[in-house]
Image (cartoon, rainbow, N blue to C red):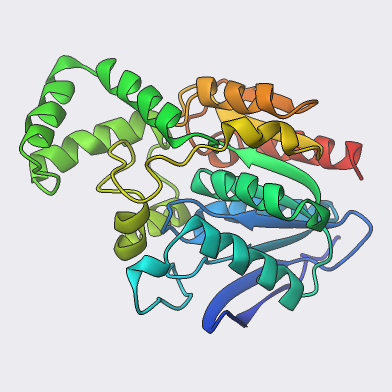
Length: 294
């Protein structure tokens, strides 16, 4: 009987802040998969299904970005930037002695992975953009399209409260939840780790960089768009997306077109977290890609 891969965790001091990390498995010929959670402001916990890959020979590394989860907050919300997260990621990779890694970023983590690949390509073996984005404006436009396709009662509730800036009204929040159940995670009930990441969202970071909810992006990333630079990425790249994803297949296609030779895989039964919604197939797809570029 095969023993479970070892698990360890700890803290690293990165640019004056303590960042929490958790590692499944040991270094080996298959390499290291380093994962980036979304939000910005969530925790690594909702990505834990990816630890399945440790049983297939990979060392799988998770961490909470600065200001998130078990990691330390910053004294000023102005420190919450994509540039800071890129710099922290490179410093953490070096501090943990990971060497060149396979990098998987989910949602905002996919956006962060693209930014990191543009700045530190030599630190990567492959790139996986999991329901990620290269253009916030395009993503917002697509989310607004999804909103227009909601049942009229939900759509009108959202529009009425948004017009008044009532983003915390219980009726509005209930309507937002209906959007999430269609386009964030279609499982019922939601997995505990996924629910925990949402419940533990760092509001200072999420509010600063994103805004009041997934489809109302008024924060500092609202104009972020690296689409013109995507051809600079020359790494083996896998892009995954759910059929019902809030970061839609249109967004995934734009990344696929921009990164020459990239592979795009659509998960027909999934929304934003196919590693939960179609877990077994997702692990098979990722493992096949990684082994093709070992």
